[in-house]
Image (tube, rainbow, N blue to C red; front, side):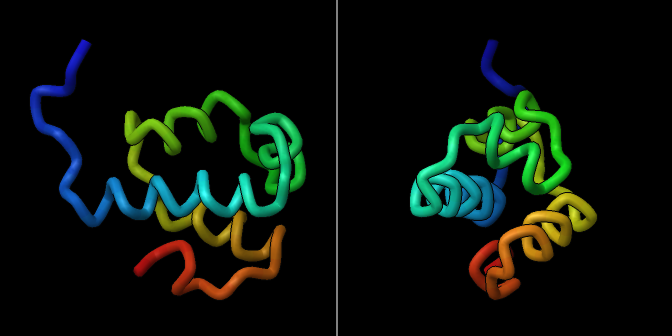
Length: 74
């Protein structure tokens, strides 16, 4: 079912960067989620722009993989 209020472009871009990071690291959603302490179903929801990536989850990803915060949030 399509969302009534689609995500703004910026939010979709953030979600796509999570997927790009996971692909660059060559990790499955399960592996990525385990390393960051995030459920793999949430990773899928972020990647498909079904859920907004909140600040706390973004920080977990940044800490787990040592990435530049701008990679995720800009």
